[in-house]
Length: 392
Image (tube, rainbow, N blue to C red):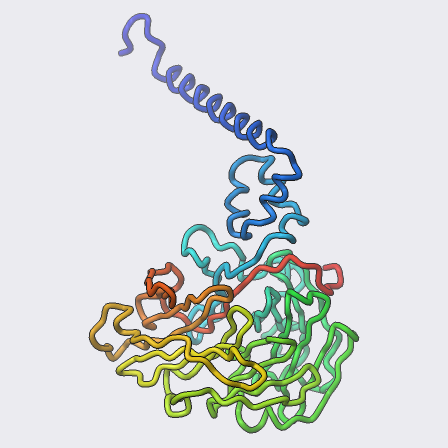
C-alpha cells in the first residue's frame, strides 16, 4: 500500500514517462538548434564529403538531419566507396542477401529489390557493376515455362530502373542457362552503360548511347571458356573476363577481343578449387590465386603497367596464418573473395565459419560479420549519379 501523501504507483509511472518524453524533446530541440547554428552552406559541404554509410547513420540524429541527409544533391556529391557485398544465400537456394561491410546494423540495401517487384513477380538478380544491377524478369508466371522476359538495369540506391528493348536474338531467354550476361558501367561516365549477352556463337550488345542492340559473331565465347559475370571486371571502358586457361580476355564494347592477358606466376597450375579470381582496385586490374589448397599461399598481383601488360606482385601471404591455423581441415576451403576498390585491403574466408579483412600495408587482420558461407559474392559501391534510366 502506498504511503500517505505519496502519489499512487500508476501516477508515478505516468509522471516518469512524461518527464522522459519532455527530456527527449528538449534534447532533440538542442540538437536541432546545434545543427541550425551551422550555416547551411558549410553544413552541406561537410555532409557531401562523408561516405554514404556515414550519411545513413546521421539520419538518426533528428528529423531535420533526416531530411538533410536524404537530400539527393548531397547524396550525389558524397564520395562513394565499398559499402558491402551482395551474395547468393547458398548453393541450390534462390535469393540474394546483402551484408554491410561493417557487419553491423540493418542492410543498407534490400537485396530483394522491392521496387522492381511492384512490376514483376519474379526478379532474377544478375551482374552488379558500378552500383547498377542487371536483372532478368520473366513476363509470365515462371511455372508456365514461358520463354519471354525483360532485361532490366536498376540502381538499388536510388530505386531507379530501366527496361531494355527486346533482344533481337530469338529465344535468348532460353539460351541464358547455357551462356552468360554482363553489365558494364563506370560511375565516372554515368551517361552510358552496356549489356553483353553471349548466346552460343553470337553476342548481343546493348548500348544506352544508341538505345539499340547489335549482334556480332565472336569466338571469345567458345574458346577459351569464360567463367561468367562473377569473374569479370569493367575497367577503362572495356570488359575483362577470366577464362578457364588462367588468362583474361579484354573485350571492347563492340564485342571484339582487344587482348588476351596471361595471369602471372603459377596461376595455370593452380586452377583448382579455389581457382584464380580477378577484381579491381585503385584503377588497376587485380588477379589472385592460391598456389596449393593445402599450403594455402596466396599471391596477389596488380596490372599497374596496363599498356605493356606487366604485372606487379603486390603481396603474398599464407592464408592459414591469417586465420590462426596450422593446417587446413578437410571441410575448409580458404580463398580470397574480394579486394577493396580504394585501399590495399583484401577479404578472405575459410569457406565455413569465418570471414576476415587483411590490410596488406600494415598486415592487420579483422574479423568481419558478413555471411560466413560465401557464394556468388559481388562487391557493392552505391551510385547516386544521374544515369540513363527511363524514369521508373
